[in-house]
Length: 141
Image (cartoon, rainbow, N blue to C red):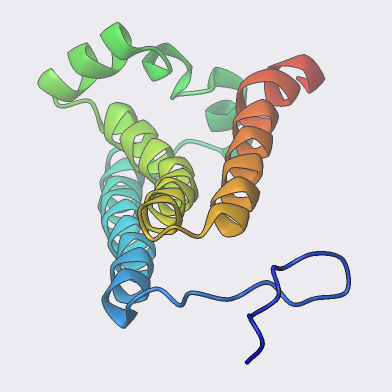
């Protein structure tokens, strides 16, 4: 009677598959995030075009209409005031947050399912996403 060998160099690591419901929930995060952000963006874009349809492209771009809504206080005030630009900013933020939430949900399910290697890879992806968004993005700009 031989005992099973421990995983190591040259030996496969046992794979514990997550339940199908975990993968369904992770994909649902992407679908919902994309759907919500697109709905906000499309509605905001239509409203913006109705309100500012006669302005030229260069005037809109040079004025940077969402700049004052890129902080929490400005966004909250803009949404409360019904400013279309604030809703466009909210849609963009939802679009950016969607892959971050997907990676977080992946980390949660892999970690809770005992898949340490996949949890570590997912955590590394999360760190790279946040570095790109919070450090490299502002530094490049």
